[in-house]
Image 1 (cartoon, protein in one colour):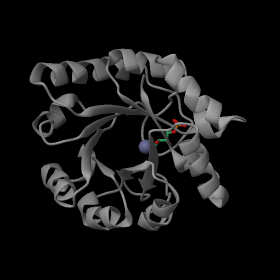
Image 2 (image 1 turned 90 degrees about the horizontal axis):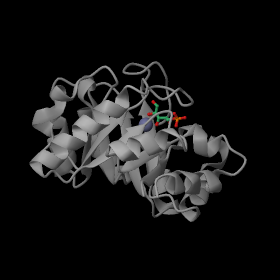
Image 3 (image 1 turned 180 degrees about the horizontal axis):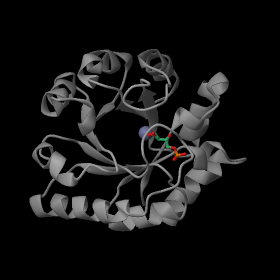
Image 4 (image 1 turned 120 degrees about the horizontal axis):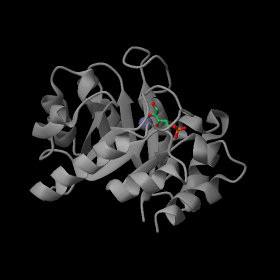
Length: 217
Ligand code: DX5
Ligand code: ZN
């Protein structure tokens, strides 16, 4: 069964505590927090103060997906705000290895993220270092986009590297996840699924979280 990380990007920001606690009560495994700077991606969202405000109202693991340029500038502040895991894009910094080391040094789990157009060869040297790899299954920046089917083969290729080398990292997928697409990802080796619009743009978000788990049971 896959772990589910609802993305608060599609939640109601005026009722964020309610929407987060709903996810926790519905059996979510983590909370996915999409941070955007209007530079790395063509959209803005929120920053570390949102993480700090959420920390005391949930015991869910806070999975912070940084879609910002030179993320190493802010790693310390996100760790201090209460992040449990920080994800940085390989495309967002000249010094990805260093950025991941900074995350580990801050006592937080480290994740490397790859855009759809970025080959796995860009992250091969990083695999021994990370706790999680995030394969983007849409172009980052917006919720509610269509899942890119071509990414299923990429997930499978990453899983093969993982098995070959005995790596322990989780494989997360993000973008266009629903009860259909989650199954293909899970079968290819994904262990964590992010879901934004599928969960929060629904009349019954708690049921949608369960549906993702049932689809991979
Ligand atoms: C997109 C974000 C996603 C987004 C997913 O840049 O990284 O986490 O919230 O939204 P859905 O699940 O609607 O594709
Ligand atoms: Zn995300």
